[in-house]
Length: 429
Image (cartoon, rainbow, N blue to C red; front, side, top):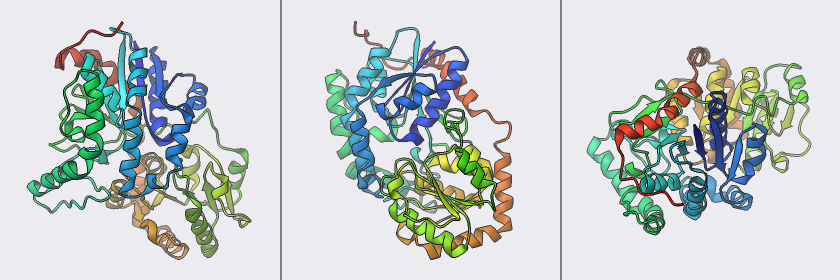
């Protein structure tokens, strides 16, 4: 069987699909990863086939846009990428689809693949990395600009989602999406992000039930596997200098604002100052050396990259942006966390981890050295948080989410036949 993996976004979006691709290849399947050329070297080092969607310049223009990390503007920035990429992503899918031999797994933003599914009745799963994607009037996610609380009546929650659709989401997404669907001869979609963007055949959530229990109003075709936790292990190993630093003293505090963060100067400056105030060792993780303060103190080091599965078990605290991949690695390592959410799903992840008792959250505007240092001290002394971190870490033992995800993808042809979704149109010659 051939599997097309379409993923759009940053390294945090691409890494899980590389992990899925490697697991599928081990089962004997042919795997093609369809994504931005920025990630071509990684995918080819992993030994997977690469198919370009868009250009590397497209990726650079987005990641350098400060609006990407704005609580409200971030949504518009992300979906402008998708809107401009409908045709390249659709063509990449259709140019590589072999009838009767191919199934598709597409990330949340792979709306072009959903259009291809509607047009040609292709076997496809939608893969969501984070629970914030799932709307619920029972337990709504915590989203920027969406003040929906659990105590609100269900009708009020549904009304607020409807208002968001009518005033924010649909005006941005629906017109260009429906123009593209019109070019394909497809009927328009009224509320794209309400139900349509979930594949009617299979939805896979790459997180466990203990992190986000499925709600009765989630799509019924949803299945949860677990955090994939692929981090380039075996391809990009820990630098020798970092390994030496880790063994040369007490466990350090690890600071990372996320792989796509192109404006991390303030974060790192305050982080270094916090280490100085605490007299603690620190590790700054960023591929952007120009974000790092010059003349770092001797107990603080900067490294471009290291697999978090190797680094975080040796850390005292992980301070990060709230991306689901970093959060999962920290939970698996049993390390306490401080989250500085900026946009997207980060607020929801911060909220879930705080309720689990393993993390504290700092608003981005309040991320200052004195406050960071104070919370680090409180976390280090918090024995209850240490116990909860250890308890959560044990939940990762013996779990094989990539294998479970592969099982669900392999079932897609059967799921397609059983569901009988849509009316198949003739594939183009």
